[in-house]
Amino acid sequence: MANVTLTFEDGTIRVTSDTALDTDALPDTNLDIEYDPRSETLRAPAFQYAALRDALDAAGHDVTDDVLALPTLDLDSTYRLREYQQDALDAWQSGDGNAGSGPPERGVLELPTGSGKTVIGIAAMEALGVPTLVVVPTIDLLTQWREELTTEFDRPVGQLGGGEQRVEDVTVATYDSAYLRAAELGDCFGLIVFDEVHHLGGEGYRDIARLLAAPARLGLTATFERPDGAHEVVADLLGPLVHRIGVDDLAGEHLADYDIKRLTVALTDEEREEYERHQSTFTDYLASSNIQLRSGSDYQELVKRSGTDPRAREALLAKQRAREITMNAERKVERLAEILDRHRADRVIVFTASTDLVYRLSERFLIPAITHETGANEREAILQRFRDGTYSRVVTANVLDEGVDVPDANVGVVLAGSGSEREFTQRLGRILRPKDGEEGAGRALLYELVTKDTAEERVARRRR
Image 1 (cartoon, rainbow, N blue to C red):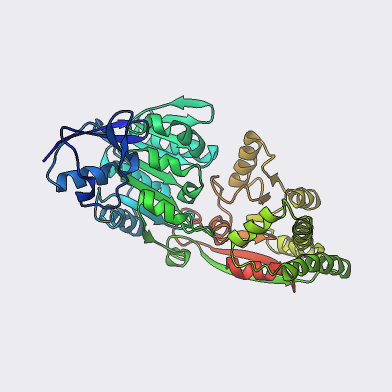
Image 2: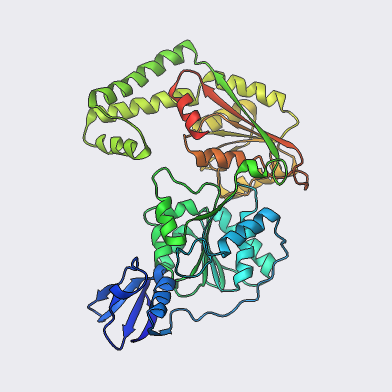
């Protein structure tokens, strides 16, 4: 048996041995161990650290582990988990995500928006008591997590992003900042918490998880699966989906009960004529080119083809114009007027897919607008006035789907959106938080406005 030393270096685990190692004889055949001629040592990606250590131990080698030299943290939160939150945490801690090697605390939890995913993340940090990096997609979430952790643990909390680069034993980072610093900080944390973990499936962001040695890994999301299948990569890096709770599991008890009303509207004669013309251009090209759009990847292939094929480009532009007609249909706006009048006493969020339509609706109905063009201070002022009741309605295009602490609303109106189940679930979650501090109080209502006899009907069916 060999004397083996493990050290961390630039996002990898360096394996030094006093004798030649037969890596093929190690128990875990999925380890990606390669010889590095520069250092004349073996190397493995940092994310396989725990599995590599366990495989060497199982093979009987004498292992000196110099990868993580971390302090034990006394983290004590005031939160007391609800039963469903405790069940989720138990599933993560039980070992379901370790695939037979490494620590048990690995995997992804899927819970609805408003169900307290942050609370579960804090409980995981409290349970392990190790330096932790929390990775989030937006500056809003960065601020929310930092303030929450500072309050709960009464200790300095580091921040990577939003104009700061400060590392502490408990640190919050944006995905962008974590991506830039992962190789450098890979041996500083024992637990990583990825909020909105579906973002980790992005090609560049995957390296965050690959370059960090942290054995314990927790992913939090309302919708784990991605249309492009990249959630499978996330499962390899963090562990699989170990616990799922749906909206219907909590509605009426822990979240507001809800109804979904789908309302169809007809295009005007002028809109119908223009829609059919553009849609025909698109479908005729698909038919003549023998192209079938079965998935998002098929559509991406069409987009690539448009770079060299003028007819493909014309077809895509026609498809976009047809979609714009359905999104901006005049009778949708008329129906929205009826809904707003009916729900004068309610708090309403109107969701669209078009910034131009947001401003149009804002001007017509005198509703505060939030888009990607809205500055952070202005957005927070609008949300605060929505929170305290000064405003009873807001209109937005995608910005409030995730990563923003949205005040309670009990009515949502979806005028346009994608076929994404994630987007629909997130928008529904914006109106499902418990009301008046009482679990189950109130009943939420989500309207879906869909143009009749258009491709939008198929999109609506797909996202539902």
